[in-house]
Amino acid sequence: MVANRHGRALRSVLASSSEFDAVYSAHAPSVFRRARVLLADDEEAQRVVSDVFGLLYDRPDHYLGQPA
Image (cartoon, rainbow, N blue to C red):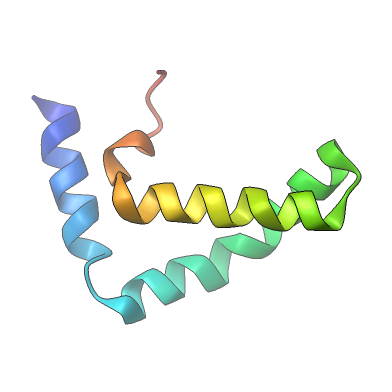
């Protein structure tokens, strides 16, 4: 299955903390800005960032650009 193969590949890329930190540093600010616009609340926006990147770390197969 393609999604499983991509999920494993993404998981291996994010396996090192420095790789994950690089992804977080590159994308967390834009995730935060979007969430803040949608929610109009900085605290809730930060929770969204934590949730998104927590899921990315735990379940990278959910973030392959494919519909749910």
